[in-house]
Length: 571
Ligand code: NOJ
Image 1 (cartoon, rainbow, N blue to C red):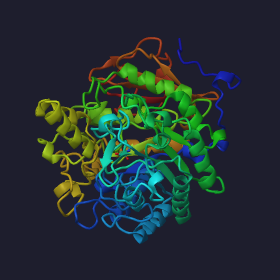
Image 2: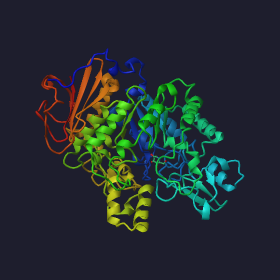
Image 3: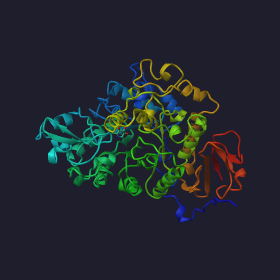
Image 4: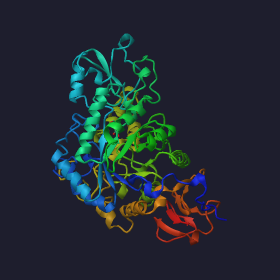
């Protein structure tokens, strides 16, 4: 019995809305995220820069990616590694200059690679001239560009919101005796998008970058630009649970689209980072007819292993992960579009979090690559993922740099009396510096990242895990990604086929089909350290006759999936 019946094109439930010819360019694209600080250092100051990105463009061109998402390179005091911007229309000297940026853009375009900028407009740096003016007096014309509130009863903060980086989301400013809102660090005051002048200033800046030739924006916590106004001003007892997002977010994004993108021809990309949104929200945000954003980054699947706090990890739960991703596949099947990611600069490394980063590093890195890239949506690769880079376990908190981890450590140890060792264990598992250690290019000093002293140490495993070694290896994670990217470019079923999860309750097996018209692809993956015998409803009996398109073990058709084996069949 064949469990997976090819469907007929006439079945309305399975007909994809997007015909291949009419589908937007990003349905067949793969995006690569560069975190410039940690990518490649061209001038020996220990910090990655634009010259480093230019020098490595061929690595990305050979990988085959269509676009780079460049994390922030704007002038910044770097409290949050550039997500605290002091000037939106320049380049921080630590990264280069506008001239160097233009050169990078031209060289990327020559290779057919687009550049998508990071747009961080929920907040600025407290050193941005807008905020410097705003804080100077209560009647300054820019006062209302940020969220200022008088102290609540007994001098308390205006409401109970906590900052994402520990402590309250409000800081009292001595100059005027009022509090300002910062959902992140106190050096990152939130802009007041209720003020039309703020919105116009942002649109004008976005137009300036697009006129310069950039290809779109990844929008940092963009759903938070709209606040629930009744909550902002209190009462002080207001809970900080749930999302601060206000319903006016759709108006803002539609206005942004009209003011920035509507009149433009050309292939742009907009992806909004949106913590805490539901599938129903996502349908609204990404419905092309509503003209808001092309796709969003949602967080459900990367929150499943977080306990009460993000630094208290829970064991991985494959069933929950599959179900979550499948619900998003289903929810955005007819309208809207998914982005696909398992790690980025804020998340642990995927092979350490979801795989086995010691005994089965190659197998589990490639398994998750295959599983993710065969979902319907636009895949994002985070630097180093393409060679199976792993989490790091630095010995002491002094080796860490991330403001979130450092604030959490201080708060947990000093205020809540937790043991330093247990807090450090949480940072090892979930901390953002796992993703931020230098890109491992080769086995030379500091992984070939810099000739100087790196701003954060390289993962000590760089002599074994690096680009040069991986590309020379028989079993190369890089080559596996190359094949996945090529498949998405060439096979409309990968880009557009309907998704169906098989065996949702199976605790080791990740299996699904993709179907477009009468063409069916089948993914079978064993997400475990032990072999998994192929049996049951989900195994088509003609599997031996099916074409194996890609797999991460040599040899075809073994009756058991070996540890972390993943296969892609065309039925
Ligand atoms: C999300 C970014 O990805 C993260 O790195 C940053 O710290 C916060 N937004 C604040 O900008």
